[in-house]
Figure 1: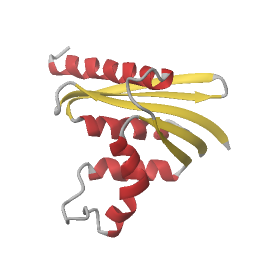
Figure 2: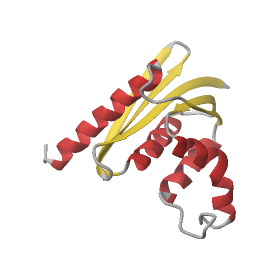
Figure 3: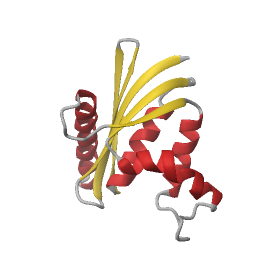
Figure 4: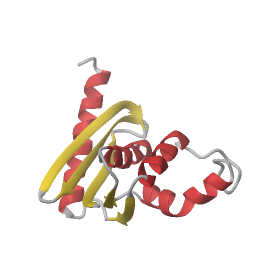
Length: 150
């Protein structure tokens, strides 16, 4: 099974506002960079989208070390998800899970791989995270230009 290292990040200019996601995938000395954006979104949706896009980009099952600076994504996948699923996508206090569509997509994408989730402090000099952040901000710019019609 191939071993892939991933850095994913999301960004939003305003919350909600134009947002972007960025991903760095590294395998066997090669690197692939992906980014995209949406004109009206939230930071949490972009963080989730980054993780989804990174895992969906893998064409076969892999061992993945996925770095994120989002405690929302990390805790969601590693702590909250089993309870949400047991409760029919409800939180512990009975409310509907926010971003359920993306959580379900991320759960499905992650299930195809052996994923180790690793939190990294954002904007703290980690080279992979800084690059993913730059890509996410590039995605924000693309989303902003969509708003202006460009």
